[in-house]
Image 1 (cartoon, rainbow, N blue to C red):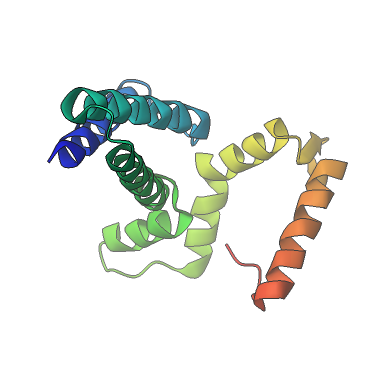
Image 2 (cartoon, one colour):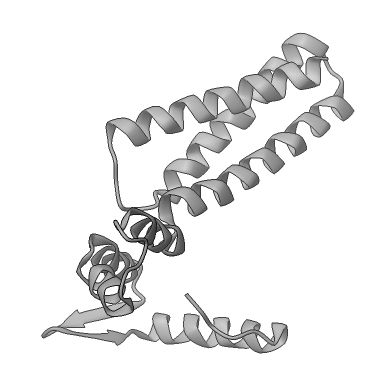
Length: 163
């Protein structure tokens, strides 16, 4: 029982803090650093709560921490799918169309004009992956190395690069 209470307290604190910050300070930036910091705080709460409830039960503490980590990973995927997914954004655009039909060119134009496109370029620029100069975008050395690494992983998985 201590395990469930500790996990519940840690995840509830993480979720409440993330949703409160997300609502107060919306951002197009995925803020993975913020999520990681909140997750670490949640793990601290789990450890403290488990210690208070179960004492020095090391096996129970490890189980609680692993369950909490699994919940965080699931939440990160859910957050990425709901808040950051280009596919979900495009599907929503089609859903909102009065006739349920949106010309393909209109979707492309809307995406290119959206802040998401510019946000992606800005994030890649801040990460040192691309350089923006004179209305053109080019890869930096770091960006080229990143793409080569992804390409190698893609070949290992026999997958095509999409998205």
